[in-house]
Every structure is written in C-alpha cells, then in structure tokens.
Length: 611
Ligand SMILES: Nc1ncnc2c1ncn2[C@@H]1O[C@H](COP(=O)(O)OP(=O)(O)OP(=O)(O)O)[C@@H](O)[C@H]1O
Ligand SMILES: [Mg+2]
Image 1 (tube, rainbow, N blue to C red):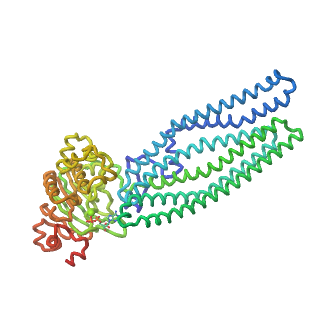
Image 2 (tube, rainbow, N blue to C red):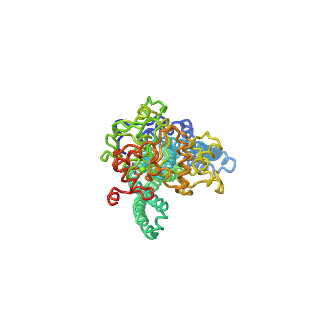
C-alpha cells in the first residue's frame, strides 16, 4: 500500500481498537482481559505436572517398602506400603482433578478469547480504505481473521498447557534425581539443556520450510477458490481439462514443499530417537553403577528409570510443540501484518459532522491518481451548484466513477480540496459525509440477506410499509412479490440470484429509502430495459426533488434532460453546459449525441473517429 500523502506517521481510525502492530504486543494485548484466568491456568497446570512427575517417587516408596518389608508378613508390609500407596492414589486423583479443572478453564476462556480477537480484527479491518480492499481478496482476509484468532489461542495454550508443565516436570525430575545422586541429576540436567537447545534450533530452522509449505497451501486454496468462482467461464470456453492441469501445477509445488518439510521433520525425529537412546542407556548405566556401589537402593533405581522415561516422553512432546508453536506464531504474525496496518483515510481528531444545507459541491485544484505515477485528475476545478442536476458523460476510463468516488472520500486526493457547502470533506467525519450522499454504484452488490433487509439497509429504522413504498418507486415491488418468499427471499452471494436489472432496482429502492440530500447515480439504470427505465426515471426525477444530483450515463438520452452536462475526457472536463448548449457548440458532446445508435457511447476514442 503506498504511503498516504500528507501523513508521515502510521495512523489509526479513532473508532478502531488500538491494536498493536507487532506480534508479541498483539498477543499480550489480546490476552490482557484474561490475566486472572491465565494465572489460574498456570497454577492448575503446575499441579497437574507435579502430580504426574511424582508418580515414580511414589513407586520408589512402594519398591523400598517391598524390598524391606516383604519378609515380615501382611500387617507390617501394609504399614510400610500405606504411605506410598496413599501418595500414589492421591497423585492420580490430583492429576485428574487439576487436569479437568484446567480443561474447564480452557472451555470457558478459549471461545471468548477467539471472539475477542476476531471482533477486534474485524473492527480494525472495517476502517481500511477502498484501495486496501481492492488489493486484498475478501476470502483471504476472512481466512486471516479466523486463522489469527485460532493460532493466537493455540500459542497461548502451547505456552500454558505444554511448555510450562514440561518445564515444571523437567525441574521436579532433575530435583528428585539430584536428591538420589548429584551425578545422575547432573547427567539428566545436562541432557535436558542440550536437548531443549537443539530442538529449539531445529524448530527455528524448520520454520522457513513450514512457512513455505503454508504459503503453497494457501496459494492452492486461492487457486481452487478462483477456479470454483469462475467455473462458468471455464465451462463457457470448454476448459475444464485445462483448469485441472492448471491446478495440478500448483498441487505439484505443494507436494514438493510438503515433502521438504516432512523430510526435515523426519530428521528431527531421528535426532529425538538418538537423544532418547542416550538418555535411557545413560540413566540405566549411571543408576546401575550407583546401585552396584550401594550408593542407591532398588527404589531409587526404579524411580530414576521411571523419571528418565517420563522426561523422554516430555522431551519428545516438547520438540513437536516447538514446531507447532512457530507455525502458530507465524500465523499470528501474518494476520497482524496483513490487517493491523495504518489506515489510509482517517478522520481528523477534531473532525465534526458534515451538515449539508444546500448541497453545493466544489472541486478546487484537485489532483488525484490511484498511483503516484499515473494521475487521473490534474488541477481539476468545477463547482456544482445547490440543487443542480448534473450529467457526467465521457469515454470509458475517463474518470467519471473516480470523480464520484472522491466526493465520497473513498480515496484521498494528493492535492487540492473537495468542498461541500464550503466545508472541506477531508476535515469532516466520514460517516456523516456518507450519510448525506447516496450512491447507486455501477455494479451494485447486495448482502446475502433477505430483500427486506437489503432495502431497509438504506434506513434501518424504516417500517415495512416504507420499504414497500421505496420498492414500488424503484419498480421492484412487483417482481419481489412474485418470488416464492417475497420480501424474505435470500439473494445469494452478492445478489447472484437476481438479474442485473433486478439487482439495480433493489439498489435504487435502498437509496430512495436513505433519502440523502446529495444523490449520485453511476450508470444506475444501465441494466434496465427501456420501458422499466422510463418508469424508474420518472420516479427518480420525482425523488430527486431539490437534491443535488450527479448522474453518470453512457446512454445519453437518460441525462439529456438534466440541468447541466459535464463531458469528461482523460480526467479533464472538456465541455460544460446544458444539452441544448452543448449540441449548439457542435463539439465532442454533439458528435457523441449524433452518433448514438440506440443511445450508447462508443467504447474507445478510436471508434469515435472511425465513425
Ligand atoms: N481501483 C483502481 N486502481 C487503479 N486504477 C484505477 C482504479 N479504478 C479506476 N482506475 C483507473 O482510473 C481511470 C479512470 O477510471 P474510472 O473508473 O473513473 O473511469 P470511468 O469514466 O468511470 O469509466 P467507465 O465509463 O468505464 O465506468 C482508468 O484509467 C482506470 O483504469
Ligand atoms: Mg465508471
């Protein structure tokens, strides 16, 4: 995203949550509501780990009891075994209780934490600009939000429920073994240090492979979504086989990336087996030597072997968790990097609401380009008087939609100002601006909600009768009532279950209900048949009342009756006047008008000359 002109520092919309831009701080910020729960979780996990690792200690007691008490018979055996047996039972019970309590905390906190992250990221995302949404796929952004929420959860639980208990269990084991004999404890402590260090380094190295693999998976996903979305195109051109081969090329890359990662992980497993063997053989050797020299008893011997096996299990778990952990953190980093970026268009701190009393629009020395290299407008100056109805005409790509997009502040100009009733729109609250300006876009899209909800979107508090009236004005009431579920019909993604003209009529009804003082129509009736268009045009004219209206049309007959027409050519207004005046001038508009067969403009300038 190019830096926003005039704003050197990263910026955030005032209504957006103050999300940190670095991964670690984002993780802490997201967890900040749950510190109490986290501490409780640490306590429960500690209890569980201690319970688990003390089992060999209880077994040592039993072994010692068996070794010393057996010949004395039943009662004294029970007396010497009572303590360790009760300890063993208590440890098992404690482990179960701690483990289930920590499971309960996970159930209470996990979904809440995910909700909080998703809500915050979504709220932050909402304030990004039109440019941002043009550069990112909607599906990919939605995926990022859910993936970040899930991965942050996993990251937190990996630390609390995996790394922490393993650390406790290593600590307790080493303490017990040091108690048995310093050599034995020292050996296992050394082994654990080397193992953790090597596992960490291996996982860190594996991260690049894992990221590469994740990137290819995500690419394949994107290709499948693209293929499915445009499957009708593929069918139209009989290219189903071509599409399969096309996808297969990306699947092949995924196979290669997957193998690279899995081979690496397999090497990690070799290391684990070798390390485990060293620990097992080493512990048995040390314990045997100590026992042989009568420095330890049978119980200590058994406990040492039991602890070594537990440590091996934990260690193996740890290195697997390292691999997952880096993947989760990578996902969170990705989400933060994609979504928590500076907002391009932000309300000024002192931005007040815009009050439109007259509806005068002025472009003053306006310069704008989507990219710095290519200007669409260079020093554009034009005034649209209050209540004036203005038609914009011009070739495709001449800047008409950009002109109206700038009035709505979808993009920030690089220079100059746009004033509405004398107020620079750069200094007003964006919501208030958009409440005063209605737009029927060139390609209206609808929510996958009922038609009722889609129309009512123009004014949420409107009653059913008002919705019906707006639909009738847009000539939509009749076709809606003919649908099996009437106003409750769902319209499919982006409104695909409606014809282009029907979709356009819903968009018109929605705007009629909104009833803002400035109305912009970007090819608002282009998809309608002439009869329907005529009816709607009359209603629209009536609805326009004293509003300031800007109407873009390729079919000149739809704007010929307006007060004024602006002819655009490559970002400049080359003619300005009423239909009659422009015809008299015998310039571009006259040429366009005279060559309209059926009321359309040619696509390119070349066609105009050819005609
Ligand atoms: N989102 C965008 N990013 C980059 N360039 C864009 C973008 N939208 C439009 N343009 C470019 O800006 C110029 C003006 O486009 P605009 O959409 O304003 O034309 P238009 O007059 O509305 O055309 P049409 O009659 O086909 O709707 C074109 O050269 C176009 O390629
Ligand atoms: Mg356009």
